[in-house]
Length: 280
Image (tube, rainbow, N blue to C red):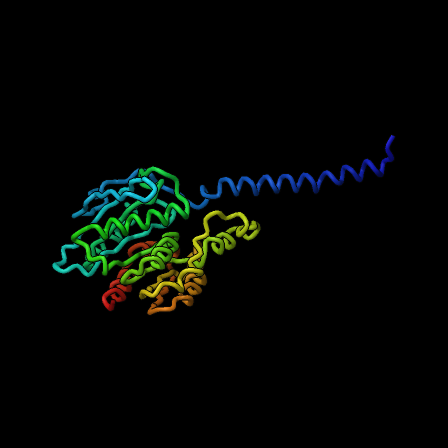
């Protein structure tokens, strides 16, 4: 018969082992399902008419890996278009949610391409960092092939997660201008802000490390952020702004949170965008 002290010691040893096993299991689940915590696609897309959009052409964007993405091309009634804006969406919803932004840009004299990434808006595929970069190249390539578009007057508009997509594309193909709304330094930094108890840098598959890429962008860059943003802290937007090497401007909208109308298509934001682009 074992001494009582030995049996008690062994029982006590079971506790930390159990904690370690449960912890490892939890981290494994986070690693496996992490993209479901990052990407929130809405597959059903209302019609342009339901979104009060006119002059909309539904277009198909072929990707290098064999997918076909759906988008809306909006034509400005302006006699001489100022350029073409490609909108890179955030991590939730689909192109219909950016209808107010597109309408404002069209009124300002720009053609606009709204499109959905893979897995969004009824498109096939599943979103990932690599996949979204492929999708961004497909959007640009489609526009380059249109005879009614001036490829030297592209503007990339990246919203939240889309800022990481837009920065990466701008480093490869310099646009006439780059507009970043609620941009972050990296997805790892955002993850650490929201999940400080997790080893985010070790777990992340998709990183969108804009802070490492923004220095390769020579185009003029406008950064817009809200000072009450609870998703992407305004400090991250400021840090990314500090890394810009070319012409730049920073607009902080007071009292605005991440998903407020003020940062979707608010008057102050649209005026700042129009003012910035008119100088390009």
